[in-house]
Image (cartoon, rainbow, N blue to C red; front, side):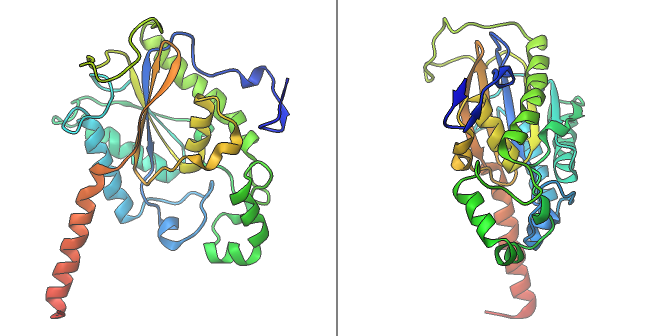
Length: 284
């Protein structure tokens, strides 16, 4: 069957990765600031570690996810997650480790959550752009970059991945993650209240955390909500921002998107450093 929104032919590979009747929650956590981000370089699948600020962001995100029902609560189930799935790239793996460490502490869940790397969640490959500074890409590949920003289905990085190629590897990775959640719980139904705000009980179903990247998360959400890939730019994911998707009877429901309040201490710490530096320098 032809899908004009995607400009390609649909196949059985385009079937939803969500198991029938799935009752579960998936938390998406973007990695912290990396060294390439500090340097203003395009990353893609280039492997670059967290910066000092990125490690602090990951610690704060871990602390938030280790105590999700502390005020203001996150819409996640009771108990610790089934697993923490992550992209194999260092910036995501290090963030996932920080989350696992926080959850294992006595003031968290007090138990170690399993970590599982999945290459299906690697960042979008950006080919010739990887490692180059933004200004260099704008100078050398200005036309291609502009086309990518305007119509990501028609243009992408030279020698990089197209969005259909990314979705082709994301879909089975998502299916595996969600099938593992389905096996850990029991199927639900749509024949129940679907409107929030009526003193709903905290869900008892299983949940998992996925730590990955801005670009691949855009494709993840488009896939879960069965939206065309040309809507790629509709989602924003801040560094160590938290998003929550709940599955009710096999239907994906957006519960929270790009929550960043847990990163507020970084602003306080930055202000304190500036104040201390000013005092040492004698500046007014």
